[in-house]
Length: 263
Length: 340
Image (cartoon, rainbow over all chains, first blue to last red; front, side, top):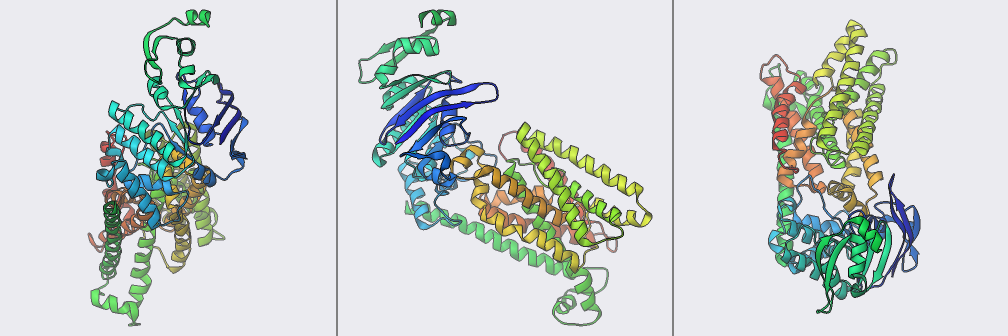
């Protein structure tokens, strides 16, 4: 279990996270939603220790991660950043092979190569295995980064807006790959999401962040209500619950003073 | 699936082949270089004299030509390696010991040791001082990169500023120095291999060769650094440590390559790019292959400089600039995309 307790983090002038607490069980997909600047990315970065939290603890099965070595943490938690700028050429195969870095010595062994080859085959990336990463489309890049995180063989997977900039088909493919992997390998995933519909459809639980604090959390149908979305996003929506998961249709933005009055 | 593994293996096989070819090229050019010179010791005689004491030919080959060739190989390897490491660590395709001004400051360190160390003139003092100043400006660059971000523009501008500062400091020393010292110093500004002996080679090779296995061992960390700090951290790389130590080692290599030969420009910039075009960005192959490319380039440039207008010798730094400047422009033009 991954437990985040009373997490606090501030950039120079802004308090980005205030007293955030989340428990994540294996086999669960959890989405973190919230407006731009709500602290979604910062939360993920704190968990993987790209930035050091000012307050609070993060425990993996009861063990404090701040006492773990970076390499040990890398075997537990995989991270897919929002974008991976690359200034120099690298093949898709090598990009995925990087995910084996926490395990391998200087020379990748047969097992490492096989894991990568298997992932590329199962994710339909075979044909572009030796292509340059930078020449790929946005959707292909995202799949490659996902494959790298899978190659890392972590228990917990953190994904920062995995579907932004993707076309419809790639959005669905990527989300299905994530939830399949989570169920198959008994992993758990935290996704920072902008697309509320995708989040409701593919998550077991949703945490709604506003201004660095947890506004509410729970099952998608509990969190995705017109009132919550109105007060956090300031957008009037209609919610369709005909299917098993809520479907959100945005109507119009509301002037912020009105939002305050309502909430 | 088997297929992909097979493809990947033949892909790495090609990189190894390229490195073998480069090694052959180094020896090939060295053989040509050893037979060229103002004295009429030809190809066969000079080759024979390498292994057999045959009077004058032996002396010419062992005292004049051979040290020069060894130093050219060392300097080429060193500058190319330092360039590769600076480029990955700063994630900046225009970084190199020369463009960042680190070569100029190492040169200033060496010149300063010559002028002020007159009484206790020693090779060690020159090498040590060159390293100290290389390190100072590398750390300055690292600081600027941290504060302002390592964009191409920031780094090039900072490099120009540092280069100007240390060039003018060197000029100042030259202005104040005695005739004799000035003579010593002048060739620093061109980069020349004409003054190296075995003692200098010993010191330079220690400074250049010792860091190589360490850097090579960090190949994966450097690969990940080139892919971005966040990914690198998430995959278990101690980014701050690798970056700091990487810069220290690259400065040591730069100082080793510069301190007895002066500033030889553009090798550190050009070699990694040429190599990346062939072997790609994996440092396990990029580091050694780029070192070999650098060796071939410097050795070729020096041999050209010695033979083109023989008996007039053009300093190697001038020849490499003629090759390097067009390439530098080519890189700038190519910058239409964010990726190189």
